[in-house]
Image 1 (cartoon, one colour):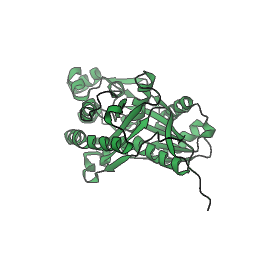
Image 2 (cartoon, one colour):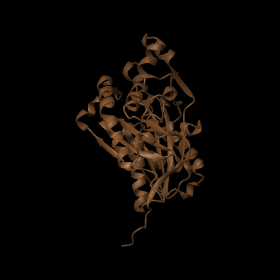
Image 3 (spheres, helix red, strand yellow):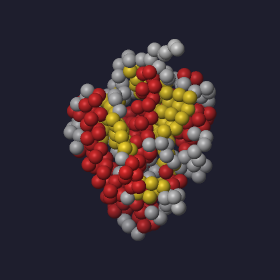
Image 4 (cartoon, helix red, strand yellow):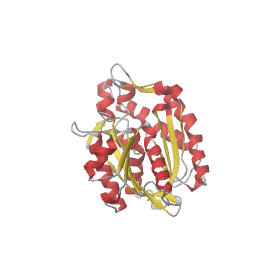
Length: 318
């Protein structure tokens, strides 16, 4: 049996994002629920949520983000040999988001599969892509987080309607002489999976917000610290902390416990909302676009959500 040589490490070669043009504002939600816009902002940290158009599907948004990442990495579709899509909101389970997205992008003969770890999905997919590249099973991998959460939200449910949005973010992972993607720290607590779940009766996403808030603000920062330790990086060396944009109150609570005083904390969810698996790559792409991080900077990615699944790793910004 002949084995592939693999590489010493893997790194992010490029990133990209796609945000739908429609926005659901705090003022609209305030009118709907008989609250004030300030009330909505105080509980979410958000000003708006991106909402997909009626004809925008998850693969369509994934392809837009994927194309942006390919352009940023300066590589062509023919150079991608694997597509991994992290998503929990596709309209149907077959075909996979990854396979359909590959087709839309003109990527032929590449492997393609989906990962469903909800809001931790992008971190899971990056870890898998990194390990596959290092093992020699793939050379360049397109990793996409894409969600249309609005499909699964009850517009009359205050607990979810004020939080979730739509969008897609992507990254290209490739071989590197150095370790540009640190070891992942991941896990789950399936005994509490009912805290965030699709109701089998009405098919809407239901969330027990207080319990989720308590879990995220007490259990996730140790995971992030372990990811730094495993990567050999002190929190003070981080240029950016990019948590899943679940709720900006949760984001700030986690970041405050890490002691990374020099790091910028991603707040992409202020305008885009909680886009589940898309939120981390979208936030990373925006930090790059706005010049808040530069090539080679260290960024801590932290995903957490339904499952209850979580994952974190340190990466170098492409």
